[in-house]
Length: 150
Image (tube, rainbow, N blue to C red; front, side):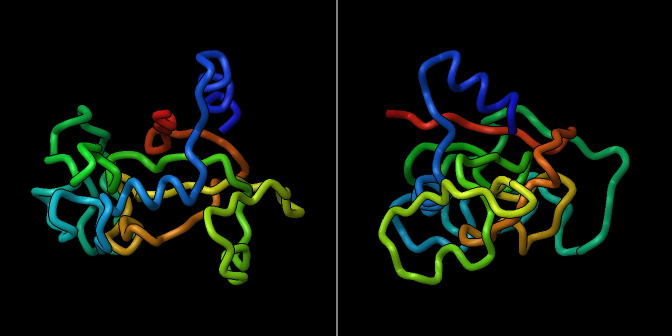
C-alpha cells in the first residue's frame, strides 16, 4: 500500500476511496460482478473459479484489457489483482449509512482496504461489494492498484 500511495502522490493523483472503487466497479448499474454485464465466468475475469482455498502455482496476472471493459470502460475491476484503496479497513465502518464515506481512522492493526479479488481467489471475492483488508500493507504478485481519474 505504501508504494502504491507513494506512486499516486508523486504523480499528483490518488488511490480511489473504497466508495469510489465500488461505484466504478458497478459501472453505473447494480452489477453483481464488475464485468461487462455483471455476470462472472473464466471468460470475463482472471480468477481461480469457484474453488475457495485453491491456489494455482502457475497462475499469474494478465495484461490489462484481456477481458471486456465494464459499462464505464474500466478493465479488470474483478480478478487479476486485488486493488488497494485509500481507506483504512473496518468491518463495521459502513453501518451508519453515510454517503460517500472514507475511513481515515486507523484501527489497532492499521490495515488498508483491498477490493476486486485476484487471479488466485474465488468468485465471492470478486463481488462488487466484497471487502477485504490488506495483510499488513505488504505487497505480493496478486496485489496492485489503480488511480482515481479526476
